Length: 328
Length: 134
Image 1 (tube, rainbow over the protein chains, first blue to last red):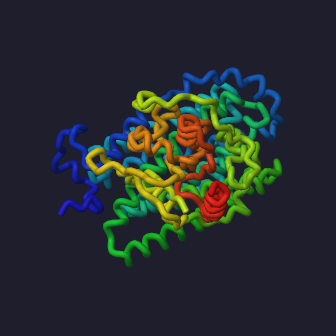
Image 2: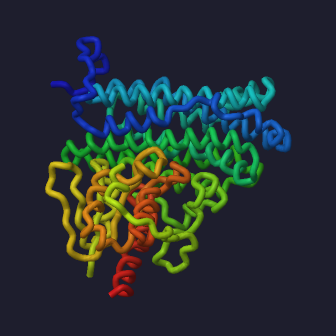
Image 3: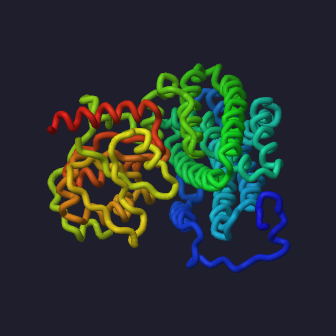
């Protein structure tokens, strides 16, 4: 029986050479191509152009920014060194393993990036202070622990649930701040780097969520229902803690309420990545348009043609459509 | 009433969204080996966005094959696009590409498998759209 669930050491018995020309799941190749096509390093972003903007931030704003990035660094470190390796143990095909090695490495690139931001913008003392803060902030530590607990328990389904929540939900209390600065035309290069991370996390969450759904679908309905309940329970637990973490960071600058909306919005997307219905109604996911525009330019424009108020639907000027045009 | 035509890969986000709409819908087949879909009535296309932000790779290949059929293309009336705002400017890009190519409006964008609110808005909107164009 080749249940990957319990055989963390299966590679010690045997490894077969990977053959990318024989796929069990063509999604693996699609995602591999997508991820490798998106490869980037922080060195390509001219972070030093943000030094003048950094100097316009108050001391408190600078401290908040460093703390936020330290918190993100911790999550990326967990994902790169514990989360993704745990998923490799659970992988059902060689191609899935290969995709996750990419995810694992990119998480380390993300973690590395925050240090690039620090060394460009901040003093060593301020950064050291923030690392100390991150070790002592109970909510940050609890969020790490809630995830690590699931990674340690050798249940491949709950590992994927935890992983998807980390990738698609837990980062966003942190991502909010660089999107906010960007909407104020501050730290725009840093925001460009964060957008690359946000793009990567979307693919990671999508892929791990997809593998979760494939595995879940093979189980009896009763067990599926049980896993679904566990998943929602974990989300609630993470959410309650995330609200406290958000308050501990943002109460002083008055952003807490809008950050919470961003949390709701992204919690919904994390659930959808797992194939579950969104939890938070639209009345509490209405993130301020400036943040959405910083995340996805144009997304604040109304594309709801039906409502009759669409501002940005435009039919392009006539282009004669040759079949060749489509044969990309 | 005319219907929807949609495409969805194995991940099934778009399929789930369309199922939640509960409107008549035809699926564009996933594999080249499946018999191609031929439509006989006006339709709205529901399409997920693929690729790396390059407009040339945003529309899934099976949808391109479907629209390369001139008869199919002549019956499209609008497009609804799936996507994810995490992809920044290319959120729902496939919808914009199809709208431009086929000279039809981009009616709506939704993320992943869509929320309850998306479903309400699209059901009401599509129903009204067909009434108006009847």
